[in-house]
Image (cartoon, protein in one colour):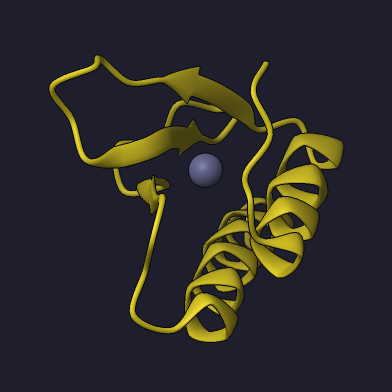
Length: 77
Ligand SMILES: [Zn+2]
């Protein structure tokens, strides 16, 4: 799997994967670096990871927040 050039985003991806998320490569036509999907395949828990987001820091936070959402939902069942 190719690595994201931004360290913060790379760490967020690693975090997602450590929680069971899947990293899915996108086609060459896509501007996204990859997609992330939760292990439970909830349709609302997936997001595109951009190669060059406006704010890498914000984008990394977005990824972590999304993963946390899934964990919270699981805990509330
Ligand atoms: Zn989920």
